[in-house]
Length: 241
Image (cartoon, rainbow, N blue to C red):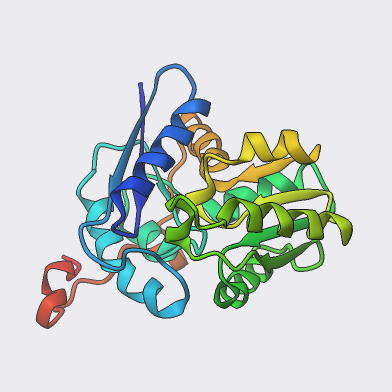
């Protein structure tokens, strides 16, 4: 049995349910998906400010599941990914990195379609970091994250229109740039006739592979165990020991 922990670093439990359900559709027999919601932080993560305050809850969730075989951070900003890798005893996969790696194996020109315009720059920085700057373009459908679950918001129509625009501009594959879109990939792929990659499901298969290979994060250099020191104030419980 392989246990994969999926942490939704925002505090919207209904989104965690969507994420967990999507993950289970692709999990191999013998893989247990445990999807948890952060206990503290923003209701949605839309930009740098939200991301900063989502990290403590994410780390708390990671540290509360020492028996997992792999972990996934279910926010397309790959929120707190480096910090999580520094403390988790198991490998941790970010859904942005997982989605780009997957899309890059099946297409040359990739469109990442995210939610609000303010998320474009953070995701462009991740695209560059992961080595896809020459192949992937980030665009936004101008939909708030929480509107993805709100009936009558028009979110589906806006997302579909943005995907159509990206394809008209030469994209060969679409990456859905929000974990809240995890349940839409299969339908959209059929609708548009191109690969539509969801980062949550892509991350599940990569997490299974890492667990199966018995690989975990290197403790040499960048992801070395944090040095023991005191933390002050509300962050005192997070002090490395």
